[in-house]
Image 1: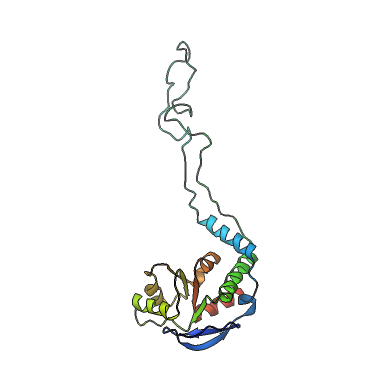
Image 2: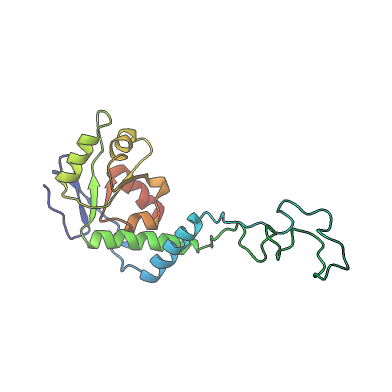
Length: 213
């Protein structure tokens, strides 16, 4: 297996884990001190946006029933009632109950990019950032994908970042447990840090550097 360099020159491997070249990483993307506060805020925003927020209770105007008064106004000795749908009655509406809502909140665009740079810098500093020359699978093969992960000695949760034309790579990695494969267009901070290792194809690396420069 090829060894990783601790400089800003990133080792590029093939599918067998052997070194086939190097790539000069952009220090403004892979060499900064991670901003923990921004990482936290952006990840919190992502998780909040993913909340369904579909919990709901029915008000007195939404429950079935009602119509006429349940009993006459006077002479029963009971408190007057205008409808069976009132909250104090069994089967009535709920007062101040939850209703569908969005938990999303906005984060400044500059903070989003800073969080991505921080995540990439952290992975590179931990030697948990890998670049593959090309995921040139002749056909979809989960077996070959597993062999690749073994060749670079990656265990635990892994995020694979590819371009939209690397279809065989997506089909090869998608069924492996604890492996998340994603298009570089969907790159986000949470998926970059929620793993033990981050693996880019060379084409995906060029794309993310163009975006973050």
